[in-house]
Every structure is written in C-alpha cells, then in structure tokens.
Length: 105
Image (cartoon, rainbow, N blue to C red; front, side):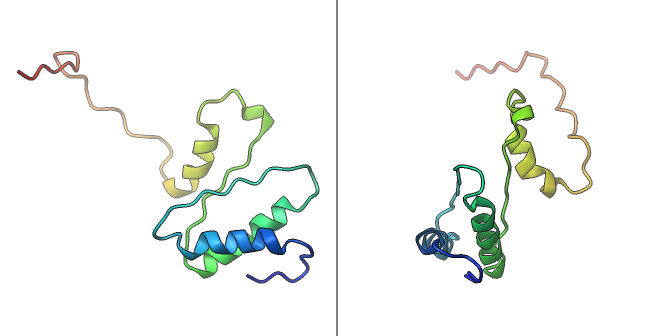
C-alpha cells in the first residue's frame, strides 16, 4: 500500500492490507467510524487504491443524516453504480390466482 504522506497509521493500514489478502476466499466489510478530521477519508482512499491494484471492486456508502429515515438508502448507494442505465426496476410478476399460497400434500 502506498502510504506517502500518511503518518502514524501503520496499524490501521496493516489491517486493511490483511483484509485484502484473502478477500476472494472470505468476503470482507470495513466500517470506519470516528470524529471528524482524524483521517478516515484518507484511510478509505488508500484502501480503495489497494483494492483496485488487486483487481477488486469496492462498493461504498456514506451515511447522510437526511436519509436516516429512508429504508435501504445505504443499500441504494451501494448498488446504484452497478445498475448502469437501468432507471426503474421491472414490474413484479403477476400475482398467482391462488393468492400465492401453496399447499403441498
């Protein structure tokens, strides 16, 4: 990981590097929390660069206070870039005549 200009974050950078080593075998999630101005954005930038060099796709979302009451707002942030030009989801299939209930036996 290129850490030029980053001071005092060796432990955190080592954790990120370790996460990426076997990520293809075991999926990983990283959550960074902390006070403003402590370097979270820089750590994430370095992590994204490291992942890109390994050929990995990085999905990211940022919590926005105004979206706290919107269900799945974070999930939308994650999947929206993968939807391409898809502006709406297809309509669900027509409901079954039996109301969707199924009795086996």
